[in-house]
Image 1 (cartoon, rainbow, N blue to C red):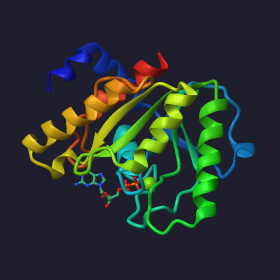
Image 2: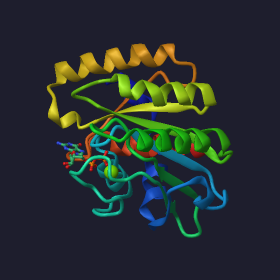
Image 3: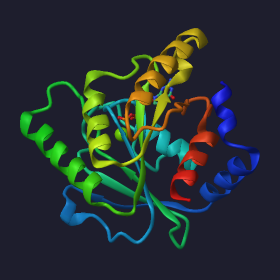
Length: 215
Ligand SMILES: Nc1nc2c(ncn2[C@@H]2O[C@H](COP(=O)(O)OP(=O)(O)O)[C@@H](O)[C@H]2O)c(=O)[nH]1
Ligand SMILES: [Mg+2]
């Protein structure tokens, strides 16, 4: 994909080094009262439950069990903070998943308030990465968070997950359709990052996208 040329070898190498040091779980915040002091730039990860968010965080950090991967969708309804570097250079924020079936209305409501308040009030938040399953493309449930990001003017990038699960021709189609939607959204980066936590494809570029965001 020609878009990959956006990150040169120096940017890729600098990003590799930035993630080579310690990455550690800091804390879990079920409400804004519990979020840590804003002492480092942050990049947040959002996506539907089961999109592969925990797997991607583990792949980024090169750890197997940093963020708990689970086959039980929708269990994490908290903001989880991870420190990268010691002393901390920046933080990754694992946002609660959305869009799982049978979510009680009050859970959805709580998700909406927590995420919206965080996006609007966190001045150290540099960017969000919104994960989209390559097999499905952008779904209606994803559009709520995209709208929230556009309205809060938090810049974001769309990241395709699980690209190992589809054929290259299908990937090209879903990438094109997703990029077309991204171009219409004011806070979205026009380029889509294809990734697979399974094969490692796109992980160096995703690290570079994080470093670019905090830079
Ligand atoms: N084939 C494949 N499976 C993946 C990939 N990423 C995640 N998965 C699987 O998708 C399921 C959900 O992943 P998880 O990271 O827990 O998703 P989360 O709910 O978004 O945190 C798990 O069974 C993972 O093993 C990937 O890149 N390729
Ligand atoms: Mg998860």
